Amino acid sequence: MTRPAPSLRSHQRTLMALVAAMASGEAGAVRDILAAVTPGGGKSLLPVIAAHQLIAAGLVERVVWVVPRDSLRLQAEEAFADPLWRAAFGHALSVRAADNERDPARGLSGYITTYQAIAAAPALHFAEARAHRTLLVIDEVHHLPAPGRPGADEGSAEDAEAGAWSRAMLPIMEAATFRLYLSGTLERADGKRILGLPYRAPAPGRGPELNLDTPGLAVIGYSRSQALAERAVLPVTFGAIDGEASWLEGGRIAGDSPRVGPHRLGAGSVRITTRPALFTALRTGFARDLLSEAFHATKRLRARRRAERDLPPGEAVRGLGKLLVVAPDQASARAYLETLRGWMPAGQGARDVRLATSGQGDAHAALAAFRLTPEPAILVTVAMAYEGLDAPEVAVVAALTHIRSRPWLEQMLARATRVDPHAGAYDTQQALVFHPDDPLFARFRLELETEQGSSIRPRRERPASAVVPERTHWRDEDPGGITPLESNAIGLRYALLRPRLVEPAPAAPAPEPPSVTERTLRQRLAATVAAQAVEDEASLRVARGSNLAHRYNAVLKRVLGKGRATMTLPELEAALGWLERNRLSDHLDCLDGDTRYAWSARQRRGRWTLERAARR
Picture (tube, rainbow, N blue to C red):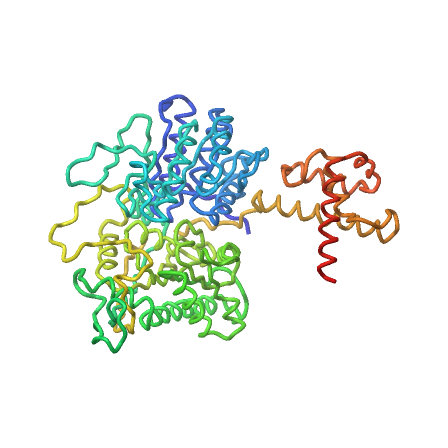
């Protein structure tokens, strides 16, 4: 069935009108666009809109899209490759996920990279920005703190990395022709200013305040209330779970002193016990109780949707609903993984529950499978997937995290508020978030319900009468070296944020992104070369001897004038076509007198001799 033509959301229409005015000269002074879009509101289409119109008008030659983590590069490619939007806009732009390699665009309309990659090779990306009129898209710009005094941003490894990103990005931002800043939040948890954004002069007792009237800057806002009204995001039900926790203080063992607690998580205000109680709860029995609630809620949802569609129990289909578990640290994430798998039959647990943390070698594969396939149905992560993960099938979140900064929690919440095109009508969907009922999360929930997630808001001063200093972002280390003993859940209550708001246009699966096509074509080239080598040796067409596949790869590079690692998509397709019509054995004379090939062949023979001697 063909998908119906999608309709643009209000902020997308606003950007389209703004860029058209820039192209016509009516808004010729605008060089910077700030799009403050509530998480899940659909900001990934904005670079496509801006690039299409600015390139068509001849104002820029290419788009460079910078994202905060590698797992988001493929999603950015998919935004440009979506066939429905290509037809709706009439654009033929393609971009590729690039590494720090020469010619990152490879003849396409631009490329996607990460802040980490730019920090590792700033000169490469700076040269690209200077060589071409560039639309620079800075995604989740709040990750970039404005540089302060030298060394001032080096308080921790995380701060040092963010400072390195900012220093590398600054000259590239200055070299770009236009800049499009994207973020779901315009404040940082550490209170620092954000790189590239204009601020008013600091006032005594107030935090940084954006100056939205700066010349050359256009601002587009899209709040949660707007997104709900347009049915762009789902309403949320919060499952607040209260509990009690007990622990031992700094470095003591059970025989040294009586234990501390039990203390309630759901105290009315922030107390000195709030932090250690939460720390203990996330690592003991309370976490298991909360996981159980989320797991069984997901199981009931999937069973109900199967029954509504009359599906057999084992059939893997899209749109049944998935569970995202956000853990406080990697050790806890691994423990949660084993707990969840223990509630399922062995084979099903290994298939349906996956782990994606920075310490896992297959984390990106797990993320991709969670996003794009019916299984796995449960993903356990720490921070890799909370921001920017486009997985509309997430219907339930287990928020087992210690972080309480509002921007962070809004991002996590947005993983479940995307409308799932495979799950039926909008009115039948909602997000369900289970969380500890501590006072800081309760305050966040109240603000969200009251404000509906306003995109641009001034930073409020904290009242001097707070019971204890309200740290909202806690590091992974324990609060004062406590030893968690035990905890348990003692109550669950639901708080529904559900303005009953026409089924959105379902999304068609995106075609293969350029980087995936490149990888596939390179693999096909390698397989074709290897097949010719095997066939020629078997038929005695070429004398047996040194590695024939290596010789044939060298021949192909000499004939085509370029190695396949640096070929563009058209060049890779042409190389495959050439191999289908020609035999590499007919072109071995290309290597006669080739000193580069002779040297590499000697190196290979030397390694082979050493390996053979070692086996003996």
